Image 1: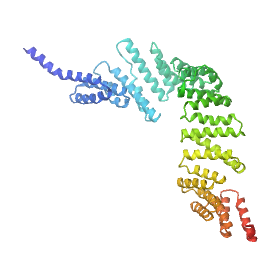
Image 2 (image 1 turned 90 degrees about the vertical axis):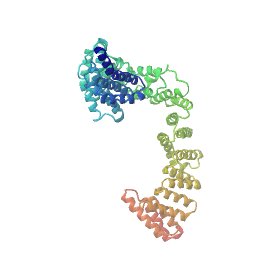
Image 3 (image 1 turned 120 degrees about the vertical axis):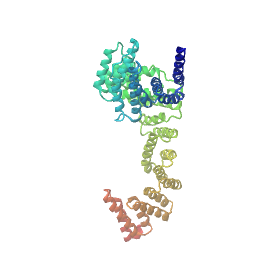
Image 4 (image 1 turned 120 degrees about the horizontal axis):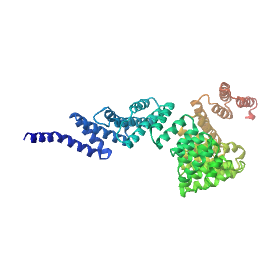
Length: 521
């Protein structure tokens, strides 16, 4: 009877633990989003009831799930507590898990913040946590866990910048393990690369199966005969990979192996549709670097047709059209302007397209005084400037330049509209008011022009162009003293800033002469 009572009491005492154990296993099998809150609740209950073994089991599950869920920092408190517990024979493994979580946290911080002091404590703790030798039953399991321990030590020292220590840790791993894993070879390659031991780094990357890492190291060693075949092989396997093609282009630019890579890619087929744009752009860049700009043009035209929304083919086409053609050929500049206009229409925020259009606009504007009768030149100048203001409607300078061009061409009403938009975008620029005054004066609105000049000087009393323009209008109206006053101020300002005063002195001389003979006015 007594034995039966004892058995019943034992069953009652074991029941909560068994139930808790079942609940833990059930929660641990759920997706992380559901499992984590349930396990946290079970942990709180187990801590209250002081069930140490259940606490340990739950912490192990929480640590594993938080790491798998990309939250290594949240896992640390659980894994650290598990590593300090000595309730079973898994303490060494718990310590390894803790070290790996520390390393994962450091990696996460590096991605978000970069290398810095905030990362070092995690790396130091990872080294300390992995310092103790692992003692685990079973040879295969022990080998795998020892490899993981070595990986933590090598990578932590590498990230700390302790390259010699990392090399020593890798050598210890090589001697300790029967087979060095691909991951460890990749780590060695990174250490050697950081040590600028390029050839050793490339060989280690190749053993790790990392073709791109090996190619970068061979490039650094100035051995394109080793890197180009690697790039060509990877490109043949994935010709639409923009990151891969960009690295290949950077590599051959560094080694000067443009021709070698272009030749190596001859047998690689260009994918259909817009998937082939990246490879076409790469081939065009390689041809340009090899001085074959004209040969690159058909490739860029093909790329532009494949993806009409991508501005890059048009941008490169615009540049190469000028490089490949004759500068004196107006058709070349028409084609370049059309390409830049198309590029900025596809991407209004494109700095390169805006710079290209501005470059053509400056060239044509400088020719307007001699080629203003040539409609081809004038239309191209207006077309590129209109494309700029359409892409950048809040850019006061773009509107002012368009207004200046239209004014020089005698399209005064359109010029006044452009100046109005420029003032709307920036009402505090004296240059816009001064140029507006020139347009108003050209249409016979002398008083309005004078008001515009006065406004420009109100905004900036040292604006010499405003003073010169105002002086000219006042002189024509017979207000010589006021004109001379403006010119005197312009001369003083020009002297102060080291600018020539010849223009203002010439006007001063005109004022003096007309005072002597009014017929000269």
